[in-house]
Length: 333
Image 1 (spheres, helix red, strand yellow):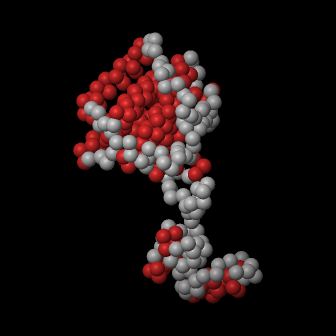
Image 2 (image 1 turned 90 degrees about the vertical axis):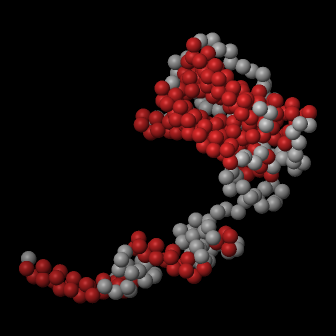
C-alpha cells in the first residue's frame, strides 16, 4: 500500500511542472499513445476560456471571423465573414426562383406563398350567447377610439392594427407550448398554427411600415397599447381560451372591414396607389408591378383566414373539446 502511494506521488511530481506550461496539454497528448487529441496550445486556464481567447485573437486580427479557418471556410467577403464566427455558424446564401439573391433574413423563400383570394370575406359569427356578446361588444368598444384617433388615415391605422393583431397568436402559442410541456402531450399542431399567425401579422406590420412612416407619438401609442393588450390577453387566455379566440375572431372581422375601407379610399384616389413594397412582392409572390392595392387585398385575405381559425378554435372549446383533439390548420394563412 505504501509503495503504491509513493509511486503515485512520484508520478504527480513529474507531471506537475508540465501543468504550469502553456504547452503542457499538447506535450502530454504527444507523449501518450492515444494520438494527437489537441493540436493547438491551450493556456492552463482551461479549455472554455481558451475558446474565448481564440475568438478575441481573431477579432484583433481583422474582426469577427477574420480568418478563413475561424469563419468556417466562408470566403464570400467581409459582410459574410462578419457574421460567421469561430463557432462555424455561417448563414446560407439563398436565391429566388429567378436566380437573384434573397435579401430577407426574417423569412425564407419556402415560407413565401400565394394567398387564397377566393375566401368568403362576408362570413360573420353571429353572437348567440353571453360569451359571444361580451366578445363582440368588447371589440366594438375597442374600435371606437381607433376610429377617433386615426379617422381615414388607413395606412397608419393598418400599422397600429397589426401591432395588436400579432399579439394573440404569440400569447396563445406560448401558453399552449408550456401546457404541452407540463402535461407531456402533443398540441395537435396548434402551437405552430398560432405562431404562424403571429409571424404572418408581423410581416403585415413590416410591410405597412414601408408605406406609412409612423410619427413619434404613434410609436409611443404602440408601446402603450401593446403593453396593455398583451397583459389583458394573457390573463384572458389563462382564464378562458374560448373567449379569447372568439375575441380575436371578431377583431379579424373588424380588420376585414378596415381593409375594405382602405381599398375604397385607394379606388377613389384619396390614397395614392403606390408601388408595392419589395417585402410584400417576395412574401406573397406578387408580380413585380404589384401596387399597394394588391397588398391590401392579400392582407385582407390573410385576416379572413385568421378570422376562421380563431372562431373555429373557440367552437372547439365551446363543444367541450380541447384544441389538441382537432388537427390545426397549419399553413392556413
